[in-house]
Image (cartoon, rainbow, N blue to C red; front, side, top):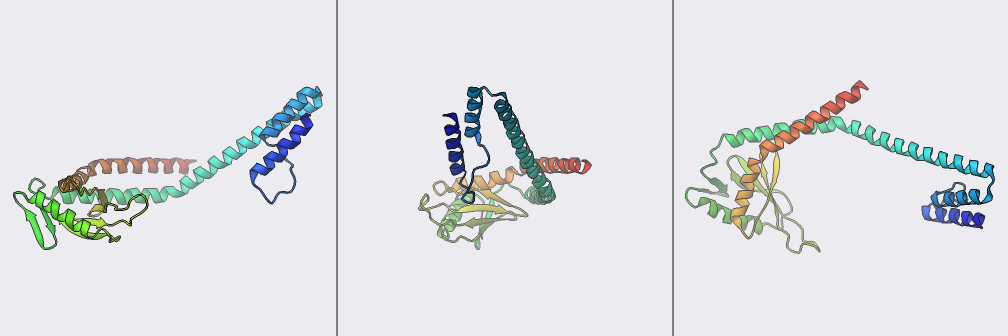
Length: 230
């Protein structure tokens, strides 16, 4: 009976592996080995039981070898990507620092934004600029290329339309604040003033981005040094 179950288990394991090129079953899979253990115990033959024990140990060693190979591949890939990650971190830090310097050269207490040929400044300018900017971006919501729509203290405000989909029949365009780097903000059609607040918030979080990029750069550099030592 156990012999029959073992044969069946081998056949099922072969089918489940999906390898159509294989015509014979030669190796025991997990379920087949379980039946083999039961057969060995039922037979009481010490040689059969020893064979099952050895086969089980071999399978454990094979699993450890496969795990080691996967880990070795993953580490090798990470090491090969380190130079790219270091360079990307350097560029990001440089861009953020340049944009922080440009931001700090302007007075953000008094609002000023240029949309087309018109500059919005003074009392009530924030609300007017918000409405004008939102209207302009929504007018070009079908344009999937990134285009400059306005200027804010040396930075470009860029929008990019999205193609309608099954999940979004009327998608909201994406907006970005662009200086040396490009940073995502949020367009709020229902509350245009919220769009301006999102843009200003984007400027305010650059110090945190710089610190995060600096930590990433330091960690990548340290990892690279350790691998070079080994």
